[in-house]
Length: 449
Image (tube, rainbow, N blue to C red; front, side, top):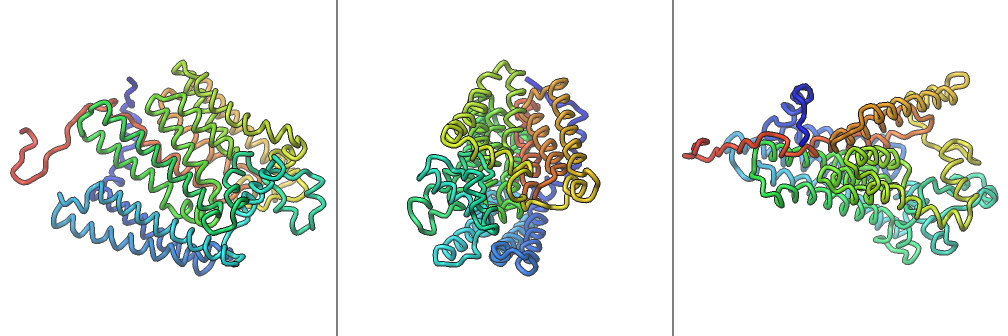
């Protein structure tokens, strides 16, 4: 059993004080209010039409959630023990907020798109659906370099599929039937919801199967789990991404599921979950590496690696056999900036600014990215993560550094480190903390009874 050291606990104190204010409702109110403001600004100022459409609907959803939490806070002042202000009620508000700010605008845009609107989806939705169609017809989701070069200059970018082969599976429904519910975003949402539901069930089931009593530690972990789910669902960067594009969300959710399986001592399942994520997108590969190192500390590295490496390799093998040049062009050359066209991912992070403004900037940015990777590798070698919490923090901070230093990147990629770092507190084991029962605050009851 590994117990958090006192220094680490002190570092978390200020965050917990903020997170626990008014039973968690104070931070809920701030989250929804700021999100409502962001959505309203997006609806008015965004130059991307799918984003504007999302903002118009989501702003109302966030506003309703803000008003609901305000009512909960007022009720809590009058009746601190009311069930309408407790953790189950906060879960309900979170679910309704996700439905209103993500699922509703997603369905609306999908229906409009099926009706003929061409401004109701980002390019990645079309790319994934084209990949699914090519997979069905040709056995590979990728176009070769000659086929991409033969496209009109304005269409060459859309000819690329810069994802792992598994991502094309989300485009298969559209290849089979052209209707609103075969929009790839609908299936991104299904995959995301399923993975997150499994993660929540795994963490909650640990206490149920071990018969642990409800203590302050377990209550704190359940509250942290809610905060982690909020970060992966109703946080605007996630809600906007899923409603308008969405390919990153199932990858993120599978990574969170893998880390959850690690926290519940299921290394084989952790490997399978992160392997599925790695079969979709390269962003999951660093998480897989960290989890393999975690597995080695538990003499389970082989079990983790079997899924973490085996599934992406199994997904790549058919595409490699059908058209090796097409695979290389899409998965390697294009992301590295050596394709026929340049990636439009150009958010002004340090890596992009260095690459675009300094002499030999791309080499400098690449060197900084490699240096960050070496630093993380040294950290893993000298102090391998022995807990799922440590592994999650390494993944979160590592991806944050990589996103900041990549020459081509997007603001939307920040959803990975933000969700991972928020998820980490939920992975603490209640058994690692003294089992102090929660006080009974009902009238007429004594905590020493």
